Length: 564
Image 1 (tube, helix red, strand yellow):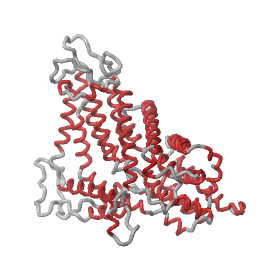
Image 2: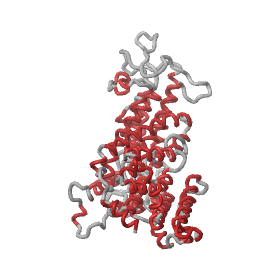
Image 3: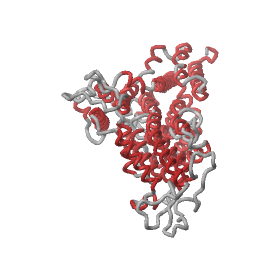
Image 4: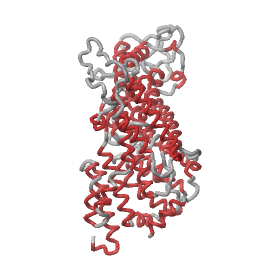
């Protein structure tokens, strides 16, 4: 690097950034291993000291994630997620359209607190059990038409099975494209084409809902954590990003995306008769709908009455959420104002405290007898330790995504190198020709670019590469950095067109109900919906929430210190 003279530090930093980005995009080595490249190249090239690089690999968000994983481990261990999912699906009913919406709602809710991958892996087996029940009843329906439970009136033809008219001679067409039931080929595992369409719709809806749910909270997905930590590192004086402000901004986005995505999938796979889907009439249920409801109800009954550990987990879940919201709500003093010293407590403080308590609180109700083993159930485990805690270290280890922790740390290390070497300032100067574009156009271009790249590269790696560039661009153009960084952070999650786009896509694809062409067709619409809704949000309610019309003082201070 000596040959570059006065530019040697920037050139060396750029070299490390390019090498790391190539490893991330190509995935020639695991993402976590590639994130360690700055740990040895920065000290070798004289960009950062080894101790300075090491400090970047463990930040406040690491502790935040550890606390959330403790809660997630308790939710999984005691099957609270399954109880929530089955209950929400029971409320939605067994009509194909409403069934899809019910699964999407429970997946969004779970994905707010668990990783998108874990949520998809949890919900898909439940959905698969329902689909298998649908397929098995469809075999009988190919031999004789399904009958309505209380049918004497004309009913709208369901995607789950056809309904006879009172004349028993014709089929009444409603929300499907063809008036007659089309059988799949003999080699197909689906009784009819409509059964296959339902399987496609429900499978894809789960991966899309997991992505949507991950947008809502800071801890919902790793890309949100990457943004929060890099933003707070780059702009330490900006006290605008916390759990509450992020939730207020992203929750309406998730609701709008959820409804539009459901409408898009319903139109694509189930037809466009939404009147029948939304009908509350119980007289139009087919036999297979009743059997599907019975299957879901039986799965719920198997869980038994709600247990003491589930109650404790639910209380911790609610308590953690309330403490996050009320820490610094902004419009009223938060609970941190009760302490004399300010700025010492963050969302990670709450997360780690409650996570630690889960290792202390016994899983057995105080002063209660040992739980009885069900009769005839030789596989039922009986914990010999009456003081066994809610979770063990092994439970935590099984869920803790250490690769993501190292990946996030590698991103912080790269950002620190760009800041110290002056590379971010140099990049910003090269982007000055874009100064004539309006802010919304810059944001839209950033969203489209990020959402395109993330289809082929991992979401965390894509965001880690683009955040410093977009920050420098915003500072150069005198745009509030949040105007570009928040939309780009959200759009990086919209890699939903290919199985390699993200792990939830791969999980759903592995069940064999959908083909790549189905994912591309449906994913393109979801991607477009996501970009448009995010742009709507940043141009409307995001403006007063983050004061986007003005170039903030904390960004001016960053420019001043960076130039020094």
